[in-house]
Length: 179
Image 1 (cartoon, rainbow, N blue to C red):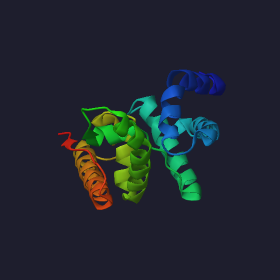
Image 2: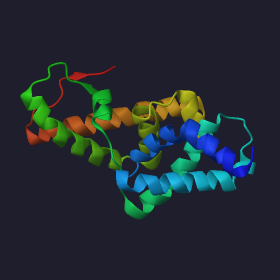
Image 3: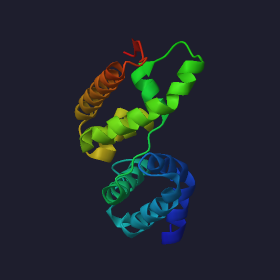
């Protein structure tokens, strides 16, 4: 494939996944710029892709580096409620729960930002992007055991921090934890 058609193919096949990944590292207004930078870097370094992993994980690893560079400049990470739901299960939805969701999102956002970089990365990849252990190990160049251990420890830290915050505030906090 020619340079442009190869990048066009990658964008067509994996553009949505890369976009969804980048959304968690920055605000939606900057994602287009990061997408463009990711695919430009992929095009200029395509000769380094050895096809030992899937091209999607290779592109995500490039996007990760682009996002990290942006993060260092901006210190912005955006986290959705789905990660909160991965940490806690609230089996009774009511108006009070609905009102607390925004505050919980902010709490989770703040807590994830306090995690060490390795834990923050794995929480975004596994907990938000829902990449498999194998895919995460390829993106991060870690063993699968390290991916699982780091993700488990990050979830424990987040769960504890969030519970302590809600208890300190005397607010209603999740009563039922996930496994």
